[in-house]
Length: 148
Image (cartoon, rainbow, N blue to C red):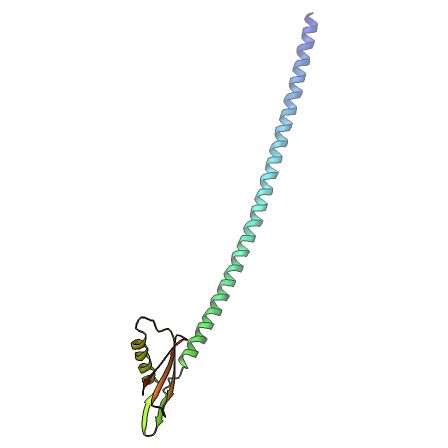
């Protein structure tokens, strides 16, 4: 029986050694797999970083181009605004003289008298010197007249 016990102990030792070897191999394989996974993640992160950098450069270029275009547009608008010409309209009829601005002021004042509670949004005037009148249409539906 002692011999059988020795054989059994030897078998258990061999089995334990084989199991330990298998565990070490599995641990080594797991370590290698982990390293490979880490390397792949690092590579993907590097690629993503490059793409983000390229996207940032592209966005910066587009923003710069848009800013330049906006600056040019503003400069053109400013140049056009500088070229605006001041105008004055003077009407002469039978020895009398009056300006469009004077007629407009009279029409607006008359509107305020005629329609006290309404707000003047727009006004068109019609000057008829032969009748000595200024006719107006205000807010598209209010009409009236005033003497020149």
